[in-house]
Image (cartoon, rainbow, N blue to C red):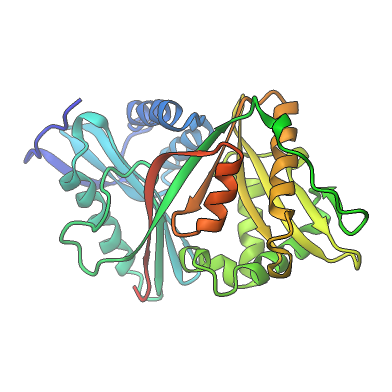
Length: 320
């Protein structure tokens, strides 16, 4: 459906001013869009947004056409960083002008918190690609890919034999400290640590892990499909975190391998095992996101049949 031209009747209001249920139609449409576009059940995230907005506990804005909510954005603050959690405008009203109207309002409000030094955003449903109009300052922009694979041909991928050199274990929270330290080591100097600064320290990586395990933003955490690899000294050297984003669709939320182990097939083997575990739980597809410039990772995923079905950008304002 073509977007409507920008109308003078559209206005931006704080989410806290809305009546309970005001976002219902908007969230239903967004949930359906996630399902059609990405094979992703967004309903758990939509329910959280609705619940917190109804309790006036969610910081954000709504775009109104008369009294009807046709777009929304929200953010959370983590110490000196703001994270824009979502920004969505309904199909009939989606346009760069309306999306930027919401984004500019969000950034203005965040700037009123003088202790903030950084803002991050990965807005999967944003229609704008490339530079954000006349927005100043422009953020650093990192093109990313959403990739999807069907799982019917897993038997064609042979396992890697390590002859006792490595041991694999299913996820358990007792491994959280080791996993966080591994993430911080692996992403030192990596482009993804510029997108998500939680990767830059073990403490930040622990927050990242806790978010994956506790909240549905990346799907429902699936410990049965999540794996760690340990070397002969018992040190974690590889990690894959898995979630379920729909009844028959798994998602690789994190895959990282110690730098000294790259090129040995460990990333391949972690991914192969996780995809087999997804299939054993009834999944018929799996997805993941990857920074487009990370060609080795993209190449690995393509070997397993992953194909890019959606492009989006990660944005970072630093300094803010």
